[in-house]
Length: 120
Image (cartoon, rainbow, N blue to C red):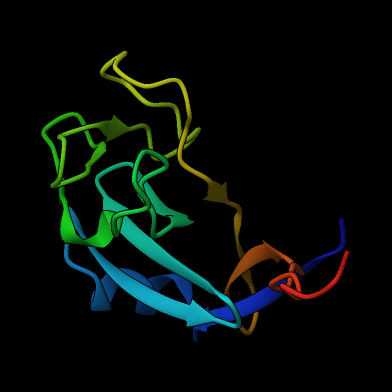
């Protein structure tokens, strides 16, 4: 699957200045909605969807362990791996790599497009 890098901020420092610790911002990039989370451990990017019911993870909170917690059923996810940490569901959240370049902070996303509902 082809992947592309998308610029989010002018620099890593700019991202950290705009996102308070233990908070997040959301972006819509093409057909994807992602959230970028800032914790003491750094910046992380993940799909803005809990894999259980596809509820926006951005409506949740960051817990004391630096995990994102879905507000609906309180499932928590590791920000580095996407692993579900409560042991209640098997599916993990989708995480995306971030990269700092000279000209900004970028996220790498798959170039997927929605399937045409009429194609077979």
